[in-house]
Image (cartoon, rainbow, N blue to C red; front, side, top):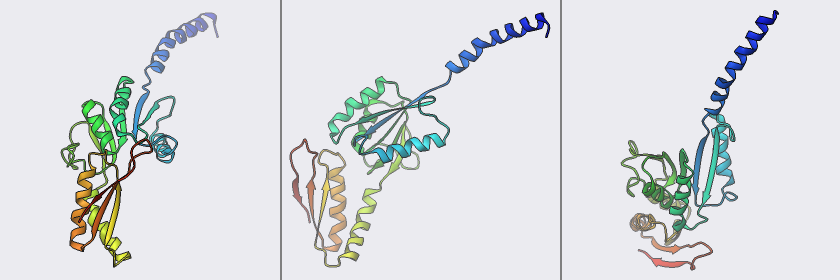
Length: 214
């Protein structure tokens, strides 16, 4: 190779370096906020499944993807502050479950995409407009709690034909609890089954409370 050609080659490569550097710097690292009721330790299986699914979609943690995990540790009143933390970190997406968590996100942002899982009644609780067309910035899954109440009681009667009383545990700080209890009470009436509702609080709270039913 002649000296002049060699110098031209080096000059061309040098000119390309800034372009390569800019391209590397332009790689987007998507920051996903996880807003959970449970700690990362107790929720490890679900979180690992999410990480694996994101990898299968082509994302690489630490290169094109990062997670910000926040847990309320069973204390629903902590959700607004945790959401504020995620917003300050400028996350690109929030993944969450439980109605209190979703409502906290809904009250804080109308622009950041939110994926919810296992919410009891997203339409009835005003989270989305409809299951087919949620609208806004929130989408995800419903646990169809209302629709399943009757089916669960039918299954219980098949297993225990003489069943006369059903007790359920629920979180009294969850805004969906009254509606869920009413669903169970209404589903139990045609079967002549009495209901009792036990308010189960976390270890920091006051013990359980009992409410009667039909």
